[in-house]
Length: 471
Image 1 (cartoon, rainbow, N blue to C red):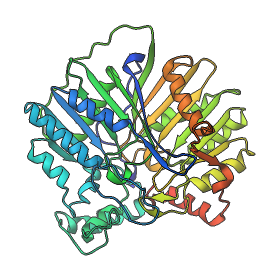
Image 2: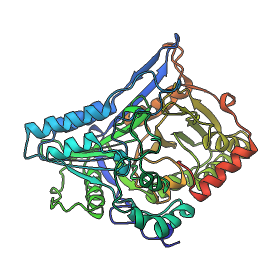
Image 3: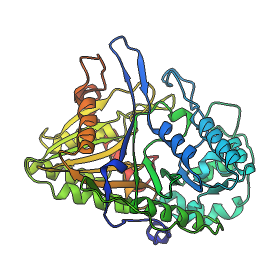
């Protein structure tokens, strides 16, 4: 019970103060995979091209935190994406080149232990960065709450103590790759805790004495390289909050660096501003539910998400629809998982519930995936003259927004007529409506993946409540 409800460590549950940021300092980035009228898959990517630009510009320091950073490519099944981009290799080589060009550049890379599969399969990428003087920090997941207490209690009391320090290869199958590497029993036992540092961001100096940060839903992971994703680049006090949070995570995970935070960034005065704040872990849920609860009849809620299963969020969306709020959800059908076929849990049972309990007032469309995933995490609340947006690493699930995984999102408020607001709305509307002129089909109607299965619905409810799930 203690490990399910204990206080989260420093640097988590962050809700920074709202800060005004010039619109010129904000950049929306999207990765989109779609088919054209001939069935050809088109992949348009912006996020990691911008990450690489940030790396190439930094002069003093770079802090990165990514959940997945490896070349694993999942199953080689028929539903694997047609093409992978070697993002892990590209990021590694970019960091190595920047360190070689500027030996005094400090680089801190925080990541999840999944990338060496809990010590069972050494990461060549991380080893190469360590050899080049990059500080590598594997997050101490034991400091996090247990989202899966039925198993984790047994693991902490009866298993952990005799597997401490047990590393190296084993003879068990590798769930992340079909290559020859096998896992140890210890790796599998740790994996079953179902917890992660799920953050995805970079913070660096911009070469001109200011901070720049990019928070995203995308991973530098080869098997994820074709996923559709979203990200936001920003500067100012919110970037400082992101940096401070990351250094705290590194410290509670054993990092002993003595880096000092840079002095306060100076933001040029501008009348064209958005309000921005950093929210992490359970503060993401607070921000999301507050935005939904305050909606009124005639306003709109637009959500594009990979996983939607959190019960409080489901209830609030139904209540909003009953108040006359126009609710539209764009969901991944949960059928593709790195070359493996899934059965639609949790999104399909949740979607059926939302339609049923709202009297079909909630509109739902499914993203057309082609072996990859619709990995975006975005919520928009459109009011008469303003737009609220929430985006980043967090899916709207119990594990992601109830303070179990490590997650980082940004919340922003801006006028409805600003270019950034129109860009966000246009992004959603283009995917929702498809593009008949260019013959691009992004989404499909609700009946395509409608699932009224009683068994799958209650399996989802059990998995969400107990934490015995990967979502």
